[in-house]
Length: 86
Image 1 (cartoon, rainbow, N blue to C red):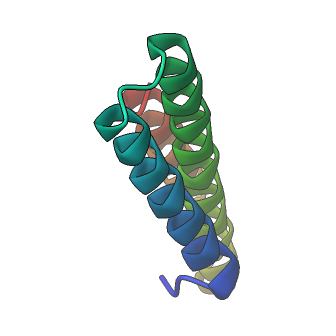
Image 2: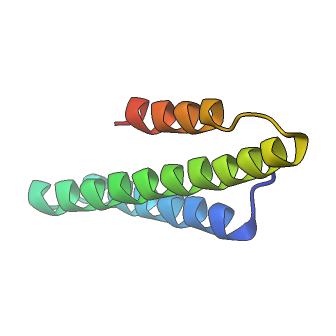
């Protein structure tokens, strides 16, 4: 699978969020603010994982269709990946 710029930029943003959280911790910021930022980072990671899995699924299904294969296995695998990530 090829990871596009949109995916990479999402991860870079998450990296920036995590660095910001570390700085907040080093500055002894209020725990509610830190937890809020951690929650936002987790949401961003979850959305990025969903994007990666869905793009991969699309790629696999298109390839399977071209080769006349059953696509259900790819769909099941994608669902399992998403379920495991929770």
